[in-house]
Length: 322
Image 1 (cartoon, rainbow, N blue to C red):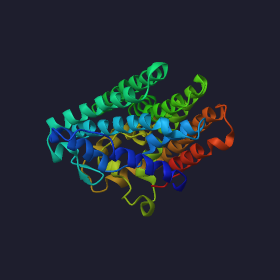
Image 2 (image 1 turned 90 degrees about the horizontal axis):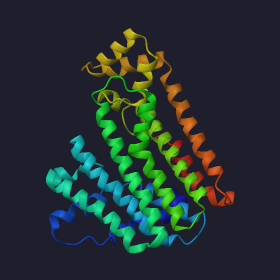
Image 3 (image 1 turned 90 degrees about the vertical axis):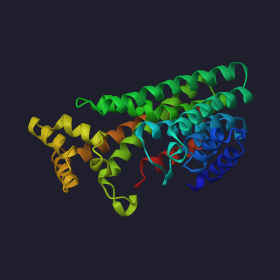
Image 4 (image 1 turned 135 degrees about the horizontal axis):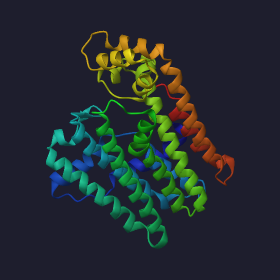
């Protein structure tokens, strides 16, 4: 991703300079720690790229970009607590390194800091619009997380419900990142709306692609054994599509395999996936949401050349093999 190396480097520099207080250390050290664990920084970069569509000087968008990344990392701290996850990017999660109480409170103060970033750097109608987008997105992410947890105990989840869940839990934050960048650049309201929809649809396609690669990806490129989601019994798009397409007897069989401990678990599930052409169905969904995203980008009233970084980033995200 050489074409956004400068943007990523700037975000990393700004993250280090976020003025979290030194005391109490048990409250603020975890905030610094979660940022140090790294990440692709795609969301804040999207904010900068959206701003650049209208104004090549994206410094004004930096606080909004940091807001998006701070919110994302706050949500990771709380998600790890809810999932009881011991590791995040190969390192101990915040609640593992400290404790659950500290994890909850440190996450809370990061959310508060999101509002501080916006209030300290924007004002008037601009601040009002940014807060409206951010508040809507923050609530939607919570909705999506609750849906995801509810799905764990349901056997009747439809593919439409699953897509709504990943849209709320993951994709709306990409849309928010882009819309906030458009707002800081004083872009037309219609363009800001199209950028939001562009990001949301890219996010949906990205998650569907992630589900696909976990099972059908080339292990030499992903660096992982295919079928991790199958071994974990996760209700991915592939599983839901298979349930919707399968005969009653195969639905029962799939459920037994996913909740069993067979050493041939992956092989048995893959047999059912192949029987019902799940790979093809999932790829088709990825293509549909990718196409929807590009349609929204095409409607934005700026020179096509200025859109190239967003197009290149989209191509990277949706055509990746790992």
